[in-house]
Each structure stands twice: as structure tokens, then as C-alpha cells.
Image 1: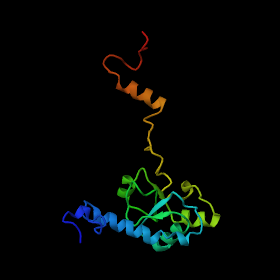
Image 2: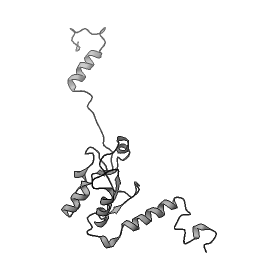
Image 3: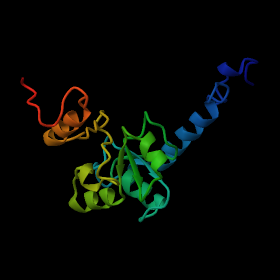
Image 4: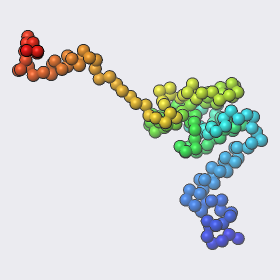
Length: 171
């Protein structure tokens, strides 16, 4: 029988702690899907994927492919454990929140397996302008005006009372 203090109970599987249920569930799923006897290669070693939404191949097929080639499949997204997000499309709000994540198509998985090596994820970016995983946000600089436009603007802004169009400004 367990002691009264549940945190010391060896049979509670960590459920008595804050967030214990979810941790226990994730651990169970990882053990269930991470069977090393089905390992075909280690192409995706140190890679942890999360599939978001509808993809071709399906999420269950991608899970099988990733795990059988040495990677980890995450049923739930956490920024700290997921290295790549696989999707067909994402809403703009989600893209904006995932600025530091690598967003790729399912082709990255299938083509890497065909090539028998891990292909660069950048070739399979879901949105090529997205700089996920670079650790830096993209700095966007837009040109305000050209030199001639700036000169015309400065000339037009000068006080018309102090200078007429015929006067030499150097006098």
C-alpha cells in the first residue's frame, strides 16, 4: 500500500505533481512509439518533429517514418523539445508566433529517407521567407526615398517667404 503522502508513492507515476498527468502521458507515448527494434537508420538522430494539421503523408505515417529512422515524434508541441514543425499550411498568427522554429513540409522527411541522409531543411521550408531556427528575427529595412526625391522634398519644405525660386541660395 502507498504511503499517505502521494508524492512518495512509487505507483503514482508522477501524477501527484503539478502537470504530472501530461508528463506521464508524454512519457508513455514516447516509449510506445520509440521502439528501437524497428530502427532502420539514424537519419533523424537528434531530430524531434511535431506534425501540425493535415499533411501528405499523414501524421501517423510521418510518425512511423521519423521514429523508424532514429528521430522522435512529439504528439504535443513544446518549444523546448521540438526541433522541426511539419505542416502543409499554417495561419499567419501561428507563423508569427513561431519565428524561431523550423517550419518544413513533409517532403523533407520523405526526400531525406530517399536520399539516405538528412537533407538541409531550408530546401523544404514551408514559407521560404520565414527565418525559423536561425535564432534571429529578420530585420526589415525599407528605403524611404532616393537622393533626388529627398532633395526635391527639402526644396519644397523651405520657407517660400525667405526664398524665391530665382534666388541663389549661396548668396
